[in-house]
Amino acid sequence: MVHRAATGLLAILLGGCASVSVKEDQWSPEKLVMPKRVYVKDYDMPSDSLAVDRSGEELEKFREDTSKNFTAELCERITKRIAPAVPLVEGVRPEPGSWVVEGRFLRLNQGSRLLRSLVGLGAGGTKMDAQTTVSAVGARGAEKAIAEIETTGGSNAEPGMLTFPTPIGGGIRAVVSLAKTGVTADQRRTARMITAAMAEKLETQGYALPGKKEKAKRSETQP
Image (cartoon, rainbow, N blue to C red; front, side):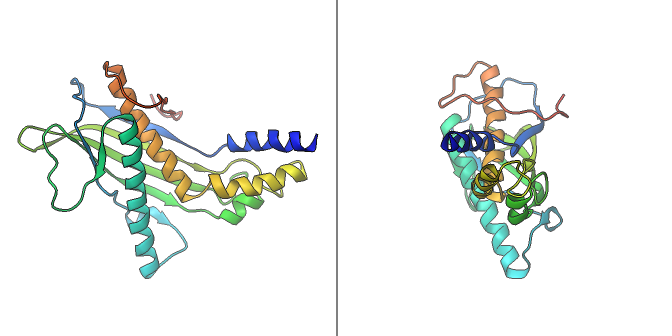
């Protein structure tokens, strides 16, 4: 009985309140052309967008690592759902027929893992907002913006170990929090929603895409 209760609680918590959604996406009115390849440029991470417990060289390393990890995550998801995607490195000129995805983090708050695990209910929650531009590369190599996508989200609104109604649930909650919250988890969710928004638009225009179809989660502010 205890095992069944723990299993049920674990399932609920894994589907908890940590999420990222598409706040807004705007697309050019013309018919899109499927990209032959997608280039992803490392996202900008302005200093005033960061709320992290680092400074100096440690902060710069965090910025670089986070940006490159996000690029890798986005490339992987776009490759599975749309077209081969690679990081855009210095000196490479995207060829005609390709897309370029770039953007910046509007807000990145790492929160407190300890507070998320112990208290939850918003305490110590993370926040990640990003703005993405998708551009198509024309015949002469000129880039034309075809989409602006803004995502928002984070974690964590569910109870923690000290605020969960049962001791078993609180203990499970503390363990699950380590895996499903934080900057790394928010990056995965953000990359997933950006890719989902891009794939949805292509599919509405009649393109058959590979991989598992996923609906982009829309925030309440989305018209």
